[in-house]
Length: 201
Image: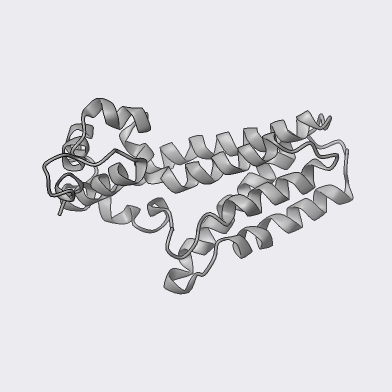
């Protein structure tokens, strides 16, 4: 049963990122990524093409709903925090964001991309997310007066990416995402804390 028919009255339910994502993945598995258009996704979801673009800038963005929401959560956490220790604030924000993901909410981008033959598109859209997270972590440090923040931000972002890959490879017994992130970022944080305000930036 498609989202549009779920109501039983011929009226589609209110659109959401998750509804459009589900419709897209169904079509990717049926027709492949290249064989699926935004129009197809909108039709399957029972909404207009314009509605799709209210939620996503491009077709490939449907892979990243969960990660985008986690990045948004980290950004909101850091924006609302006035901390004298930016690294501690970043650790808290990253772990809080990681807690929004779990065994029942694994981003499709991590586990099923091979089924739809979209590796190039996935990597291309993933780079934007990496860059965005690094910029958020950098800006959080700059806001606290740390002028040499770029290396720290990218090291932490790389650690989060590594954690995501390990979590995905752990399979059905992977458990929560948070311990993977904690194990990946804590050595990075410890290293930078030991050389705080050093010359690397």
